[in-house]
Image 1 (cartoon, rainbow, N blue to C red):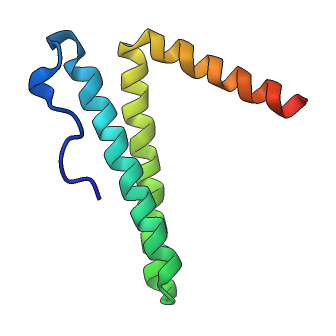
Image 2 (image 1 turned 180 degrees about the vertical axis):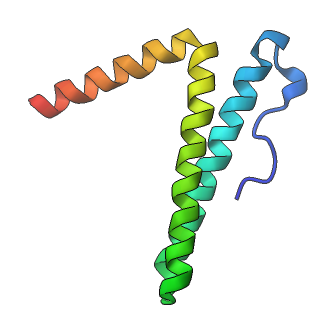
Length: 94
């Protein structure tokens, strides 16, 4: 589990701080999603499973929120995400 920011923000250029904060937020949310989905797999209690999976779904929404903000700040990220999407689509057509 992530309990510390994976980057030392004091060593990040001021113009990149917000992007790194958003990336750390995405990492934290993905970590939470993985944890909650693993918990849901282990429990046999249907009520607990239902609630945990709902919480995991909410974390996925949070990823989208962080990503939306990041894409507003980092145009290179937008370009690279699009390139990655195109690569996958090409691979799947072959």
